[in-house]
Amino acid sequence: MQSALYPMKFLPMYKQVIWGGNRLKDYGFDYSPLPNCGELWALSSVKDHESVIANGFLAENTLNEAIEIYMGDLVGDRIYNRYGTDFPLLVKFIDAAQDLSIQVHPDDTLAQRRGMPWGKTEMWYVVEADSDARVISGFRRDSDAEEYQAALATGHLTALLHEEHPTAGDVYFIPAGRVHALGKGMMVAEIQQTSDCTYRIYDYDRRDADGKLRQLHTAEALDAIDFHGVGPRAHTQYQAQLNSFTTVAACPYFTTRILPFDTPIRKNLEDHDSFTIYICVEGLTAVKSMETIVPMHVGECVLVPAVADSVELYSEGAATLLEVTVDTQGWDDAPSTEGDWVARFVGDGEGL
Image (cartoon, rainbow, N blue to C red; front, side):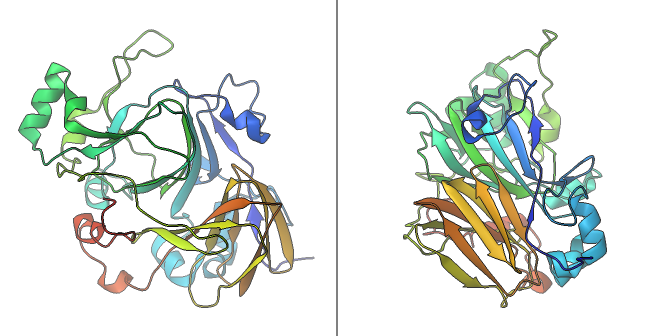
């Protein structure tokens, strides 16, 4: 009986939400009888929402069960020592047919003070965006709690916030504490810490299916907000090169690289103690590692175990992958606050 690890693919989990759309049907996903799919969870370790393995002899087992058996061989020794059987990242595809609420996430310190294991730092890669789509990310200029609360009370919060019109391929890094929102008419791939904690600040007076205003978390959000301005732009400046990896985000929780390619790529994986996730955001692709080939299309991802020595990547014509790993080299002397490491974000230094 086979017992060796291999690249894993997972069954999608579909989430119907009030603002969700139907773009994912264009990529072959069938989420009937749901009327929409606002969120497709492609890789998750969230309690009661653990991803189920779709391929190989571990099929029908959850990701958490696989980690319990293979430990550091699957995720990396240092990652296992820190997180145990809880996978540290959550990968989603978000389809916003309507505006999402304006919201903020706590950092680790605040989350743990409130009884949660981790905060939520995340990033978005824009897969599709209508011409009038918009993203809210941070404050236009430095603000404070007093100005914020006055704007919120008078219905003028958006006047304080930085807004952009995204295009496909844009990257937004959203550290915990940054007020943000996705606007209608776009689909993004989201990589985030494993946390489902969101403080909803403003929801455009939207009502739920029962006609009630959706719950806001005004008091909880106040302690989480970073009131610093984001500067002239919030999206990350990067220059992707065909058939080459370009780093678009780097923080203690994840490092993400983008790979646009049209020819087979081989990469050595021996130099780091981490799993590797490949997320398909354009075209048809395949991942080969540990004598196993796994095909992917947009909306899917593959988890390559930490013990893999190398990986080969293939495409049918032009395609784009996101590669996600965890850099554990600085963990022993990691900064004590998220504000300390945000400045080390990888890009041209202007995207934050």
